[in-house]
Length: 263
Image 1 (tube, rainbow, N blue to C red):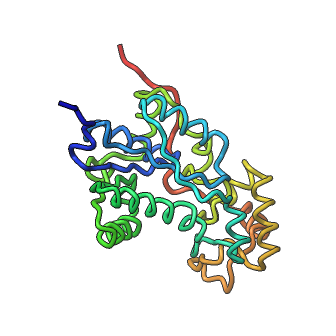
Image 2: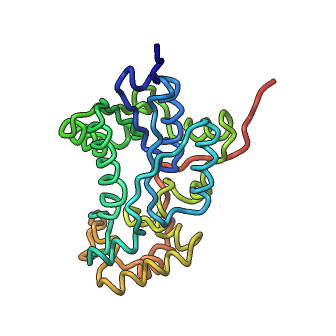
């Protein structure tokens, strides 16, 4: 009698969005503790503009988990997408994320469903992201698959996830967390004012490249910001002139430090 792999017995695939962030890494570990290993897929999309240390983290974490990475990428960089679409993404319309990540992920889920698998999508959203959670629920309902949010289910915080990466798995999170809330691509157009001031300080070459794109396309990356009551959002170079006069803080930073191990 031929023994088939467990995944073929169950007909299920558990797809973890493996983005290079600490919460997605923690969710990968959770999935491996919750489901048979043969069912779990670590799905990654390369934007071609990730921080170099994020690439390091992705590789080391996958090795620590003993799992391969399944890559589904468009093949273009963020900047190439802007030029091909004739539009500079901004914090109100980040079509780069949709094209390079969400559409690639949805395509892979449909491929699995076409092969006869039922699909569970695991996402690292927290309770602080209700809009993203609601959108994910809606997409799952339309797409005919299940979705789980283990960070919310278990009450795990982003700091908990970061500590798990460093202390339990022995993999230091991406250096981006030293100055940014997320390990998105460097120069992520979804970032707010605090983020762009941090990019200016820590990644000045990327800041200048994005500022030149604003000149090229004729509008600000921050055009979606209306909370300040301004008639228009500032361009990045203008933001620096105003922003450096006052302190702008990140909302959900994490601490990356040495593990405190007891005897």
